[in-house]
Length: 113
Image (tube, rainbow, N blue to C red; front, top):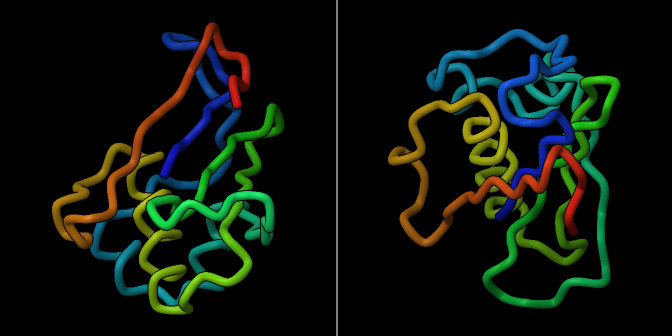
């Protein structure tokens, strides 16, 4: 999984969503969490790798886009979305399945994917 912030390192983000606790990220109903984070979940069909669980992109407006494989298992999708949001906010990731990892990709603040 990757998160792609569009804000250069060291520059304040346009993030308008509150920083949640890890407990809230894990326990809140997913639709509520997405709403609180100004996040939209979109289906993607072009990535078929079994290790790809999703991607989070922060738009210039501060809105978040979670791009997730269309045929993903619902439980896996739920966990991946929560992990991406936790990673975006720098929260503890050890509470998520060990086979799911998140990586931040930034190249001078430009979307590199």
